[in-house]
Amino acid sequence: MENEPVVQVSGLVKRYGAKTAVNGLDLVVATGAVTAVLGPNGAGKTTTIETCEGYRRPDAGTVRVLGLDPVADAERLRPRVGVMLQSGGVYSGARAEEMLRHMAKLHAHPLDVDALIERLGLGDCGRTTYRRLSGGQQQRLSLAMAVVGRPELVFLDEPTAGLDPQARRSTWDLVRELRADGVSVVLTTHFMDEAETLADDVAIIDAGRVIAQGSPEQLCRGGAENTLRFTGRPGLDLGSLLKALPDGCGAAEPLPGTYRITGSIDPQLLATVTSWCAQHGVMPDGISVERHTLEDVFLELTGKELTGKELRA
Amino acid sequence: MSAGTYTPRPGAAPLPRMIAAQTALETRMLLRNGEQLLLTVIIPTLLLVLFSAVDIVDTGAGASVDFLAPGVLALAVMSTAFTGQAIATGFERRYGVLKRLGASPLPRWALMTAKTLSVLVTEVLQIVLLTAIAFALGWSPEGNPLSVLLLLVLGTAAFSGLGLLMAGTLKAEATLAAANLVFLLLLVGGGVIVPLDKFPDAVQSVLGLLPVSALSEGLRDVLQHGASMPWAQAGILAVWAVLGLGTAAKFFRWE
Image 1: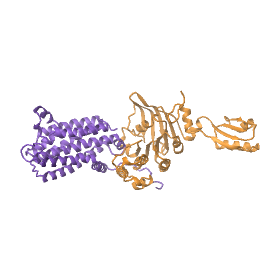
Image 2: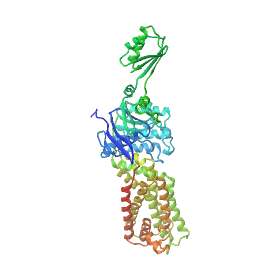
Image 3: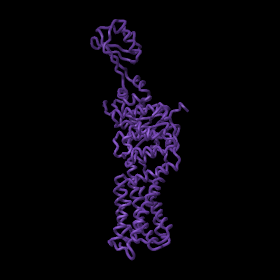
Image 4: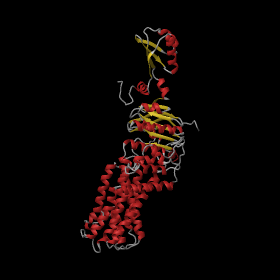
């Protein structure tokens, strides 16, 4: 049971009229991990999540959440799963604290509401009605509503959209606390830094399909090569340097005294370069590593930026 | 919060507790809303007081309050079960409240049960208030209270079905406009304050089939004329209830 995936999506197809929102999507989500579904707007993130939440019926393919069918087994599944919608979900006339207390009452063993309000910094606006809350306060209330029932699995649809940097960090901390306590988290985002710092596993999704999945490190390594630069005295023996480096690396001196090493840059490789320099009496200056980010990976895979801007014709 | 705070311990609350909590919340939302109170409390009260005290409409033989009180009770039921419920539910649908509750442990049928209970609680409050005012104005009702109760329940079912049908199919703004317009039209043409026999015969027989006319005429037969049970009106309300609830169940969209 422990190693059974919490979410298993295979061959999911979902159409809205003539538009295909999800087009043969496969996704496996590990228990106890934070999984980020990353992609530009319109890639099919929300449709995928909402199918897992039981809101949408697949046109083809199967979806299993905690081993159950989200539509057919909805009644058994709902108490076990926490949901944060992208927006809304609260009576416009309800006060923040009132709504959270109400959600708590629908569960058998809810969290302590006062402590949760304190934790999410909603103390100042507990008496404020939902329509008068700021966007960030509405987001935090929605997050609180997703976790108050002590679920095994939470789906967070763009949990930090519209948050200021401090509130964003606080949300990230909460996600980490959830994971530490054994809650599985699936979140969608179009912020690559969010996926990179928060997620154990990232599924990159574009045009309704998962085009790559893995840990942020794996994804960044798996793409094109990274680059290490340094400066030193001109005319170093590149042949000797190359021999010291692992197979598949490249070394060049594009400008006199400026060196560029390409390949899979890890701590071991950095140590190899500096010890080679030490052997040859070279003081390497301005060492810099250009690591590939998920943004680069995404760009390479799709020809698009995460914002959805087309770069290739 | 310390480590272990979020350790999963999922579970739904017992159904009666969920329904009670949902009913309490729905009722609070309704009573807190100013526009809703205007429709459900202020307008019926004003009509009852104004038209009883001032002879604006010829209400036939006897004290005007004896004619008006049953009509205003019918109006109160319509304002809560139809107008108020349609507008509130329409906006809950628009703002994703129904969607979000759909992911909570509360089953949909339990949500609808809570909505119905909240409508009934509100109606009891309205009826207590309007009855007290009517008595103060010299109302002397007759007839069997059980017949009154049955008519009120049938009327509530009929109006709820129509209100939910509107809320579950139209856009929230359209529901807001249409529900208010229907309220106004039925207030004038539904035998609430203007006796149906003031209208031409042909119009009269059509108006008599409206749910609010059936309810106000039925209540009037019992409370003003002491009839035991107006089966024709009860039948009209039952047909509206079946049609309204049936189509609402079929076409209601949660998002």
